[in-house]
Image 1: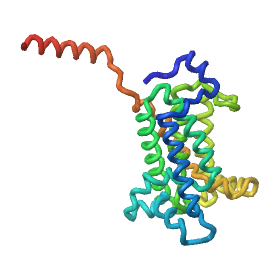
Image 2: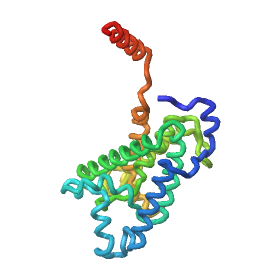
Image 3: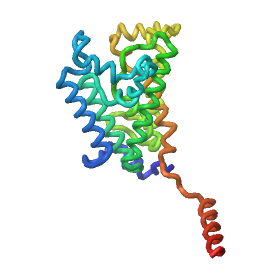
Image 4: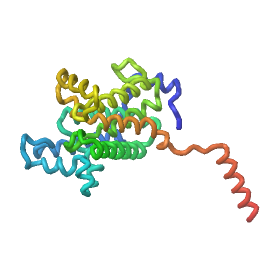
Length: 259
């Protein structure tokens, strides 16, 4: 794996976005937007108090332990293409495009896409495993690409630990650690989990910031970020070592002698 050197990081201290085109950043972003437009044009993912309309789409395509355990395994591949509202979509598209654009300096679009899919599925599996284990886990179907996007973002931070995001005056390495710690703490502080002291802290945060704070899939963010941070080296093409070259030379000499 090649980490970005000092000159790369100097160039990457501010956002350098990839130009729109036939690449992972553009194709993925456009796909999310088109899917959301189609969904919203027919009623949206969250119909107002209705069990009809697209409520059935939300149940069928959103991710839950109950759904996957009953045979709806496709939910692991569909949940991250759906979004709840325009705000949810716009934030995810911006972060997706940014992360793909930065990773495109060292990875091909196909490898970035495979990485995104792998992290999305992996973090989704961890989310539904927690639903199976903890009674206090939210049971609503999960939608949104933020698990995979968090993996892309922290993968870039792992490759360029000294870089900085626009308007955030901390290094990527420290930002990655902060994101992981905050996501983990917010998850264990979820009031419905009943963790001593931390659930009380979570209840105080609800009073201060509203219930929406714990409608966010913090475990998904933590899992996606951690998977991305530690697994990105495996997505680089294997580099040939000196031993590989010696072995290839010996093999070619043996073949030549046999001839």
